Length: 70
Image (tube, rainbow, N blue to C red; front, top):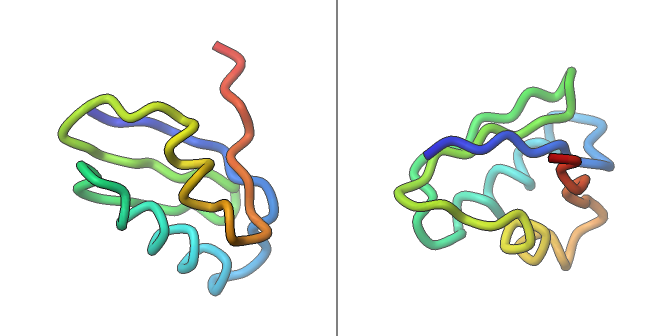
C-alpha cells in the first residue's frame, strides 16, 4: 500500500532525514520517500497504516502530519 502524507515543519535535508527515519521505524513500513519541495512523504507499507500512527512517530519532533482532507 502507498500513502502520501503532507508534513508540516520540514525545511531542510536534515528535517527530511529525521522524518524518514521516524517513519521507517513504524511497524509494517517498507519504504519512505521524502519530497522536501512539496513537503510530502510517500510511505509504502505492507498494510494500511492510519495517519495517526505517523503523527505519533513524530511526537518527539517539531514536525507534524497535516490531516488528510479526504
